[in-house]
Length: 250
Image 1: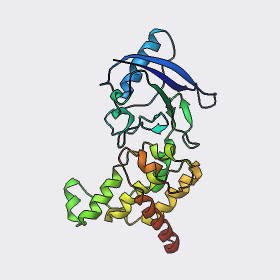
Image 2: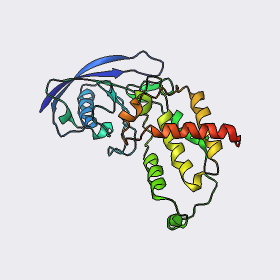
Image 3: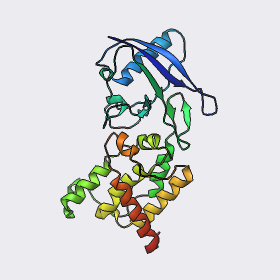
Image 4: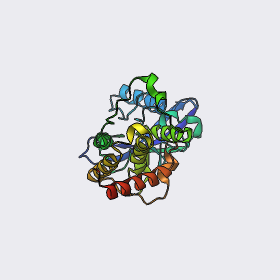
């Protein structure tokens, strides 16, 4: 069992001032996930009549992307290719001090404590729109021949869970890795090619309107992405953007 000191960001609302508050996590099993450890801390706070620490979680299997925490200055914590819910306490040592903060970005306002509003991502996806082609049922997926390398690249991009770690890690709070994953996924597949020019322009314009910054190509986004989506997608998105400007079909 471990005893840890936690410095956790507490903020009552979007407009309230926030601060780091010290807590002690006692009798922490190394087999606990990070979120399970926070659950135990919250149980203790509730028993004492204090306000529980607000944080997001859902699947706790590294799929949904809601567990948006910065642990010791790293989005999703020190392990590569994992979300916070997949981070286990064995990664830390007895007596460690752990700082836990929310995503930091103008476009991700803090709702309470460690919870941020990531609906800006939803609006970017909405701006991208639907594909107009009727793809049919699952059995119809094999009726359009697609090269294996194209399929694999598209599906690797589709693995993005929209967690926002790329934004939290970027000094410019850029959403380029998130956008480029969505744009690459659809622009590579025949079903998504019809709206490819309109889609890239609309999504990038929406990201600008939301207040996300520009990409300076330093790779922090790729380093913290739980699905290890490569920044080569950003280069593809840039090519798609310039092609759309020259073609003018948007």
